[in-house]
Image 1 (cartoon, protein in one colour):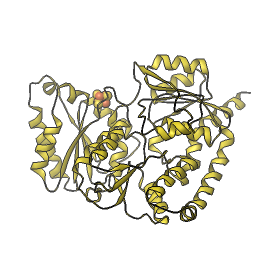
Image 2 (cartoon, rainbow, N blue to C red):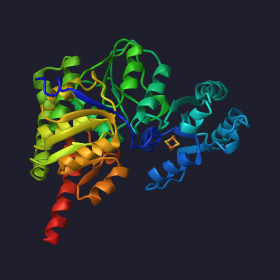
Image 3 (tube, rainbow, N blue to C red):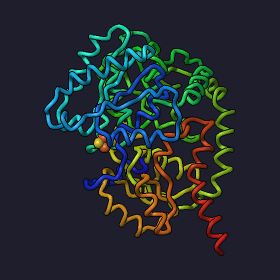
Length: 418
Ligand code: SF4
């Protein structure tokens, strides 16, 4: 089966309309319970974080912004000294913090603040209680899911070495979904399972030449490269979205660990049937509807595969910010020929194609959704897909519902007007 493997990719470079990598902090800080994310940035960065996190109420938030003032930006003050002071104050106030991420931003990059050096210096100062790491969440030429990739990739070189044969799951999923994955794997007899990132610093995985890893998210290309550099081996697979994606992902892991067919069937038959039923209950709304993905979350190809193969939708265009040929190979092979595949963003040209195609559903960023809705198009915010549990069997029906809801709402509104 080759599907879209040989489909020519339309490469676009132009104006971007996406959130920056700082956005990842919102889900990463929930996952890593003793980590703190200190954005070294401007008031704009602080506002972005506050508004993105605005729906949540914290007693003690685990992210903040060290604001670079005008004096820093003009090179008049020593930003490093201020950063050291800020970090010392923070760690004194928050002795529960075990991992501190200095998160670079557009302003810190503009003034060429060397956060790698700062992290090294601060790590030495605050060891062994706190490990200080750095990564960039800057918005220049990036998209919002790259923040997680950059964060996890930054963690890999510091992971302890091992020769043990283990399975490493890579990607920050909600705990309840991660537990479901562990249960499925345990039912197949795979119990030596670690996760990057760990829920706490002490639970961070070990890595070595006998580590086989399976990506949970398609946007973790840099993390995969860092794990490869540590001698680990990736288990190629489609992503665990929907019944089919989950089964193929589990099958790939099972094959890597020598699980026989009968054991696999015993572990997966019941949840598979549940997932199929849940998707079927929603698919009626989606069948034969045309979907257009603007490049945003990097989940576009696996989701297009799910919506076309399991829900009967037709993909018109599947745009993705970056297309990692190896990581996406299985997804491209499964996606039936037909849609345009586009990589990168040139927003005006893409919007022209949306207007010409008039799809039934456009999956896009927040900033584009309102104007498209005003033009009578139905939209789905891509960012919801990273804030909502959507992986594995038990979430397959919810995943289909996320796309069905706006279509149903539009139909109700139309009926109300009629
Ligand atoms: Fe804006 Fe850059 Fe700060 Fe992101 S990192 S909020 S794009 S200034």
